[in-house]
Every structure is written in structure tokens, then in C-alpha cells.
Length: 265
Ligand code: 13P
Image (cartoon, rainbow, N blue to C red):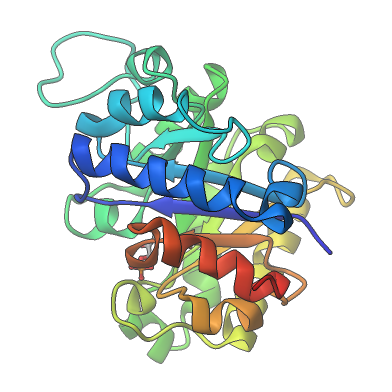
């Protein structure tokens, strides 16, 4: 069975107590299931992305559970400058200091609600790579763009912007997440064929842009992933995992996504 990346984007949810509760539940569920414990860190890689204010609680709570359960911790955003007069922003070194290994860059909510441009997002991707923090780079089209047959143009533009000037070695370190905006938080996931088509296109483009045909590329799908559609989506060969919003807020539903895929009771 292929390796699955199961990443949970908590968005603006989960205070410190809720974060500690999640880790406790998650740890208990993993150690009580030999089938899950056997795949953790091997064919299943998990990470959670709490809000900034819960990162320290997450880092602390992760020390009290089996370290294979949630080995990676990420933030949902960062700024590309190292320090200085940038009120409200959080630097990459501050995130690393809190134990972060990953950071989500260019989520559609950052692009659409907070006006982040391809150019700004590209600077953030570069700064993360320079600092050895894994960028989880999000891209995807809106409903109007899909209905206007612009999906491939849009995702290609977003990927080209993020990868401009990046070497094959750098491009390989990025985790890519295709998240069609119309599928996020709507309960209306892309079909497995729709997701496969764009993920396969993206992998090919990433390899073409870097001139490295054999480069391993990890592409996640995100947008209303739930236990009941997980098996179909995660079985597609261009999809390496899921970036999960709502269903990642409870240890049970988050783990059910992998269990549904792997056929674990
Ligand atoms: P939902 O799973 O809630 O649709 O959110 C997806 C997402 O935006 C993950 O980054």
C-alpha cells in the first residue's frame, strides 16, 4: 500500500485545552490499534496545523504521547522577512523555535480573504526552503474558474509562480496541496476523477518546470475530505494524501479517514 500523508489544517479553531485534548485522544486511539501503530511513520505520515496560539500546547502535548502518532507540527502561515516592523506577522524562526517542521503557504483563504498574491506566496515558499521548513503549498481554482474552463490555466499559473527560480532539489522538498476553492468547507468534494486529473497535471507540470522527469513529487488533495469519501480519493494514483479541514478537528474522524482508506476496523 502506498504511503499516505494525512495533514490536518485546523484553521481558526482549537484553543490550547482543545489542542491538548486532541493529542491525548489521538495518542490513545493510535496505541490501542495495533494496525494503526504498525503504519505510523511508515505508510502513514501525520501532521497537524493548529493556530499560532496553540502551537506551544501542541508541541508540549506531543511529548506525552507515542512519538510516532503525530510526528510533525506546522503553522498555517508565516512571513518571509526574518524580523522587524511587521505588526501581526510571525517569522519562520519563531515557528521553528516552537517545534514546527512544516507551514501551510498560500491557502485559498489567505489568497481570497486576505489578498495574498502569487508573488508574496512565492517569497514565502523561498524563505521556508531557505530555512529548511517544509512549505505545504496550496493551489486551486474557484468555482467561476472551473465553470469557465480555466482550472488548468489557474493551477498552472499558481505553480509556475511558486516554483519560479526554485531548483529541482528545492521543488522536491515542497508538499503540494491541490484544494479547489469550491470544495473547501462546502461538503462538496471534488470527485476522485476531478481530483486525480488536476493532481496528475500538477505533478507533470512540476517535473517539467524543474526539468527533472523522475523527481518524486507529493501532491495532497484537500476539500471536504471525510471518512466516507477518503477511500475513493486516496486510492487515486496521483493523490498522495489529504489536507483535511473540518474532519481533522476530532482525533476520531481524522483517523477514520486513514482507516477507511486502509480498511482498518
Ligand atoms: P475542509 O476539509 O473543511 O473542506 O477544508 C479543507 C481545507 O481547506 C484544508 O486546508
